[in-house]
Length: 441
Image (cartoon, rainbow, N blue to C red; front, side):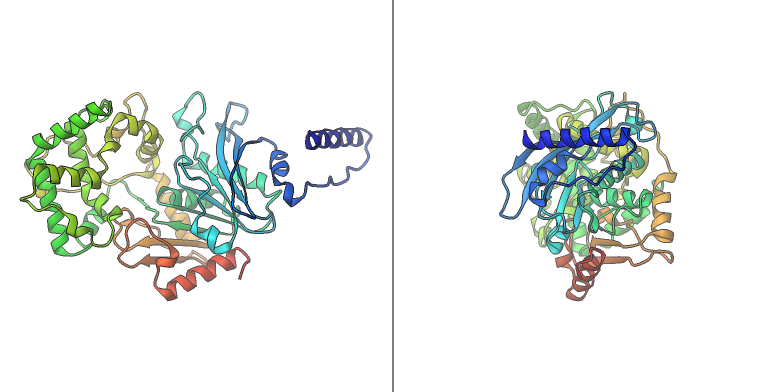
């Protein structure tokens, strides 16, 4: 009540002074220790709750009012969900997004946050989770609109956090951070993008096919292909198990079409999923051709994450697949070793994942524009990839016009990587660059 009364009194005095033509003195800000009051004073920001926090931290769940369309701010709005981990207004701020919803642990600190001992703001992307306009006009889900959400948020919070800002994210979150920089390059002092794909030409997927023929050992690659074939040779037994599981869990396949279509799609994506997520030594887990149906099915289900293809999971990820089908692009894999075993032509197309009442019109220039900016104008960018990650077969590359930027590979690593996993010299270089960008060197 005291804070609210103080703010009302300040507003009254400002109104009187302005009306009489007198100069308006700078209002005293609440102390750093009263960070909740300072956050609540940001126009459009609401504090939804406070989480338990370690000593020296305050964790707030927030909602920030964003325009549905940044070109027409008067045409509707929505609440973007955020989580703030506050340590000190004098420390750097790390802007983090997974590229999706907030997830179950939005207060988890990212590697750049820990390396810098920084504050962190975690954002939920528009159309994901509860950060969705009521009218769900899908045409407003673009990389520019999402970047403008971040720009508007950064501008608002820089009134409190005036130190250096660093953006980061992994996979789609890494892509999101780069897209934000392309449209608003001055918002942050540096960007660390982990495992960020860069599909510049969605019509050409040869880089992914080539990567699948190079990664790991020839024996492991052959074993994966053999397991794919066995899964489709034993299709009836596999899909019966899949359908029984779905029925027991009350899952459906209306969007993909059937359990059979979903299983075939999962098998086609299996090599990419294996190399993205399997730990070192995962090749030893691949079932032999003589494995029982139960063993083969359990392995395929685990590697391909079979629940992903049900309506109940796809619904939460429809914004992701919509973005793939309109701007980001996504690979389709050549599978000559599966000739004669496939039943559903075109099942790899993104339309398979998206309900038919949502229009998809692909913009071929979107990713080419991002790639061109990175190579010609990008600065203070760091790309960290896993050496065995198929998802980054096409990845960002600094060009002749890129300034103060870095590209690193984590040896023999998959999609889940870190700066500390780099070779020691590379880890030192990456950490030094990050600290320099943040003014902590």
